[in-house]
Length: 395
Ligand code: GDP
Image (cartoon, rainbow, N blue to C red):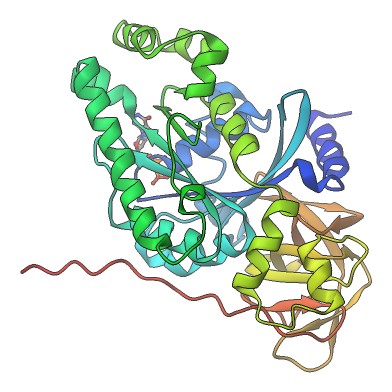
């Protein structure tokens, strides 16, 4: 059996174990390294070869789009990662980094429970860092932070340990200040801020494929001093082998992002205003795969062969071929023609997609990004608000 087929099978098995699922987005200001980091994760999970990560840019679908005539606004991909002896299914939604794509970023956030925010160590938090944080927090999506391009601080700017520490701490405190400003009215503010000590901050170099976090330093026994020495000595391959970026980030994802069972009770009241005492509400909170089907469509792509593909988050029930589903805002029902998951931007058909997962569905001809698709008529999800860049005015 081919490697890809094996991964698909493993993903299918894990789709039924919501406690081991993480639905995540990676978001960043443009050029901070989101695409390079994403490729590292795909390579780490065995989706693309290690050598080509960084060159292949599998999530950068523009070339694909031109070659195959496919329009993918926010590419989706599923991968597996073993953490503490348990295999996890990570459904990753790529968010466009450019300001004009604000609407897509917001939609992606509806489908996920955690957002890995990438910040360039040299540039620090930028306007779109603020925008993506706001989008995440508004949707009840938990942020973690990855400070990228740390190699530049060491090798290019020749910063010493203290200078570098100051800089990294100031990036973290800027990000936390933004988060605090956005969560003032929320309970448990500390749940949303990030910290090195609790492992919700990682550092490293997506370009040279090494990464570090408090838990990773404990695991590998490598401290920051040793990392600086290796980076300075241009021993980046050794750094990559001893403390690979993908392990650091994927461990952080598994450890610190909530699974759908923990996330949905907290998120549903934020994004759905229906009667919370109904069976349907209970089934969404419990991620009940035997409940009524509820899918929130976050993206529509077009495949020249399969036609329109609706991607979205299954909040309740199990999606299967042949189901007749309501589409919010339209009369009548649509028939599901196929259900699938995304592997590196390509759709793989599967038998069924249970609650807690990201699905790719064909046949929903009336659905648009933002539609609520369900087996019973229901109050639709809140519309997804587009948040634009903060306006900077000169005084
Ligand atoms: P995106 O716009 O956030 O997706 O950013 P990209 O991943 O396309 O990266 C933007 C540029 O930064 C590219 O030229 C990358 O090679 C470079 N880059 C990304 N990560 C790193 C890093 O860790 N170190 C350095 N020095 N350059 C990086």
